[in-house]
Amino acid sequence: MSIDQSNAAKVAKLARIKVEDDALPALASEFNTILGFIEQLNEVDVEGVEPMVSVEPMRLKRREDVVTDGNQQGKVLANAPDAREGFFAVPKVVE
Amino acid sequence: MSDLNKLGLAEARDALRAGDVTSVELTESCLKAIDDADALNAFVHKAPEIALERAKAADERIKAGDAPSMCGLPIGIKDLFCTKGVPSQAASKILEGFKPEYESTVSQQLADSGAVMLGKLNMDEFAMGSSNETSVYGNAVSPWRRGNDDAQLTPGGSSGGSASAVAADLCLAATGTDTGGSIRQPAAFVGITGIKPTYGRCSRWGIVAFASSLDQAGPMTKNVRDAAIMLETMCGHDPKDSTSTELAVPNFEAMLTGDIKGKKIGIPKEYRMDGMPAEIEKLWAEGAEMLKAAGAEIVDISLPHTKYALPAYYVIAPAEASSNLARYDGVRYGRRAQLAQGDGITEMYEKTRAEGFGHEVQRRVMIGTYVLSAGFYDAYYNRARKVRTLIKKDFEDVFAAGIDAILTPATPSASFGLGEMTEADPVQMYLNDVFTVTVNLAGLPGISVPAGLDQQGLPLGLQLIGRPWEEGDLLNTAYALESAAGFVAKPGKWW
Image (cartoon, rainbow over all chains, first blue to last red; front, side):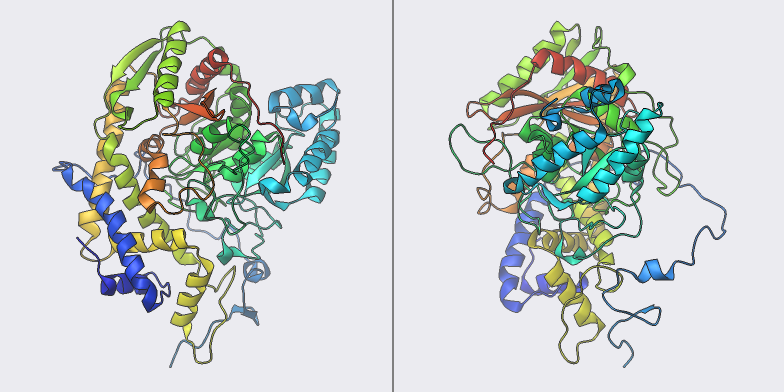
């Protein structure tokens, strides 16, 4: 499987990372190096093998569906790059 | 007492209890060493006020009697751990200015035991790297040099600042985290001890996530006894991490008898790599001889899927990273890019992440995005998870056959020069983790013990891999190896 520039641009878009057009050839080439390395996995016979979900067989713990903390609006917003009137502020979303 | 910063945890603990020294004295000695060592770029956020305040409190507690082992001992914390009110950036530009409102469980447990945090330690950005060169702070530097050559060497990565700081005696010990070898490789590069416990031993809550099914915290210390002491404080069940185990934490230090008679130590033939330096092969053979002389039985074993661990890791870890790092969107914390007139929310995400993530992090997030994307999920991600099942089964089979621990080299080479790998393709750098990454994929405990010097005078380490949840037994085998190897070399001070 080989990645061309348009695939690379698509991946960058999916990852929400802006990549300038002139950087795409180098990026595609790096992807191909790494994917070439990963291709080795095709040598392994995985017929009938379960994909690992958890390294120790465990059932994720559950707890009562009750409020355990809250009322920390100030702390939640303390590190926001832009917080206004008790909310996170972002550029306009709705056209 | 002079040079208090050079003490290990056990020695300092005993001196504190005997009243020969105070925590304030120990802490001041470390703070001075830290200020003298800016050339190492190990401590990237210093916290002298917090340290002295905690040291005073620890002295009170020791005076009152009944203080836990770590009480009053000054340590460094990797920048990956959230520490309340102290910058916690995971060495990334995207978390510039982030001061958590909460404390990670592991660093909280250390603080509760009375340990004194001196500050935050350098690392590779989001723990992605093997040389500390992906850090937004610039690379940490190893205190070791090749003889009289003044070329700067890497302390390894990702826990490079932790390794450099402990080896240079800037602190008594440090926390690290290990996703593919990030505790054990740097520990080996600088001649210290580092243990990654079984997955689930240490809570991951409050540790910036890289690959959640692989990440584990652990101590980086001056010797095996110190590792036992500090690991015990770091471990334990935490309801805030649903993968943390409810097993009781044993007194690891009490298990250090040095008696390994009758233990079966496996030597995996697949770890004998083409092109491995002869010195590493020799050290490995000597390590086996030492364990044999201590009464262990050496057994040749096979872990047939070893070769596929690194490619499986470079699917699974980036996949999990691409999901975990989706949270850095410039909205809730950290740094948002400057926007142009008319930019909407998508441009905000894309510019923030392009400016905030370094090159290696971007590469891994995008590889992860690719292997999880529609049409490739089965071919890459599911296949890698199946191979992971087989890698774990390799270990289960040898343990079921009676093997108690496995001895391997810790790294395929000694420390290399900073910048020497810049021209290499990313896969060359990934090969640093070839001996350590299997352990993360299988969730096992692994420890790196310094065992010798190469011809250039640089440290080399050996790795022991243990059965799940049997860190105590593993530490004891490591203790026997440490005693036999008698590694005492220290870097000469040039900084």
